[in-house]
Each structure stands twice: as structure tokens, then as C-alpha cells.
Amino acid sequence: MLAAPINPADINMVQGSYAILPSLPAVGGNEGVAEVEEVGAKVDRLKLGDWVVPSDAGFGTWRTVAVCAETSLQRIPKKLPLAMAAMLSVNPCTALRMLRDFVPLNPGNVTITSSNDDINDAYLIFQLITLQFCYYRPELEAMVAQLKAIGADHVFTEEELRKPALNDVFKPRLALNLDSSGTYALIFRNLHIRGFWITQWKKDNAHVRDLVTLTLGGKLKIELRGAMQV
View 1 (cartoon, one colour):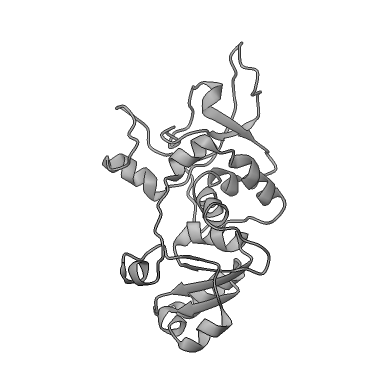
View 2: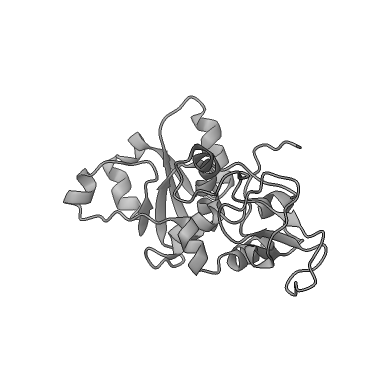
């Protein structure tokens, strides 16, 4: 393994609360990037030196080496930044699906979303015209600057977004509130709530190829907030 992030889903799996649980004993970690060091005589899709990512959840990326079937891995270009390669298959994939699978979006459409760390980072980078709302906090100014740096066109607090004047300026085509649990708007404005499980979706969709293309084209870049060597 070359690099492996820590995702909340990884912690859920360790806690035993995730929908997919490996047989024990097990190694934690669902995403990461590795380099092929040896191949078996019947392996024909991979070669020494290839970079690979797990094809499915539960691989166990928090380790130094692994022996596995070639079908459990997907090859990716070595031109990708290492950190980006390690994080490619969960949060960016989730953001891409949110933008492609719910409503048709075209250049000039407005979308709005709440702030939610790395999923939101990828979502903003993919965006066309993006409104971002967040709750007031002492570090708000720095947060606004960071969100605009990665792609937000406008950033408002929840209080600012409630002003009637904004309703005439911005008419979002897609709104995603990653933190809301209220039902008032769902009932009286005929809005729909829909959930999806990215782990299951990845089994049925070729997502890595699209994300690689976006990354190599400079359209997708996730900020690395910290790293440690183990």
C-alpha cells in the first residue's frame, strides 16, 4: 500500500455499524492506492509497478502488503497525485453521483449544498454555479475563503440565505442539504428525499474511469488537510 485515508465509513466498519462487515479477523480501511509488487502466473490484467485501487469496500487498506485476486483491484494511471489516487473511490465518487443522477444539469444552472467536508469539496469542484450555505462560526471568514478557493461562487450563512431578496437572484436547479433532518419543506413544498449507498452503486457503475479523466484534466483536485507516515 502506498497511501490510505481514514474515512468515517472505515470507523463505522470497525465499530460494527456499517452495512458491510468483513469476516474476523480483518484489516480496516476501504480506500487507498497500492503498487503491484508481484503477479501470479495466470494474471493478465496487471503487471509489476501498476498502481491499483480496491474494486469494492472491505478490502482492508490499512496495511503494508496484501495478496489478492486481480479481480479485486482496478488499475489507475500513475500520473495521478498520490493523495488524490488514495481518495478517489469514495468522496469524489459520491459527489459525482449527486450531480449526475438526480436532475439534468446544464451550464449556467445553479446548485446549492450545505458544507460537509471532503464530499462537499469534490462537489464544489465539479460545479457549474454553486451556492454554499453554512452555519455561523467564529472561523467563518476563513471558511468562506476556503470554499471559494475550491469552487464555490457564493457562500452564505443560513441566516443570509433566508432573506427574501436572494429568492429572486438565485433559483437553484438542485439543492442538497447534507445535514437537514426537517420534514416541513418536504411536505408543503412537494420536495423529495432520496438516499443512496455509494458502495452498492459502485458495483454497478464505471466510476473510476470518469474520476481519473477529471483529475488528469485538472477539473478535480481534493485538498489534503493532513498526512502521516506509518
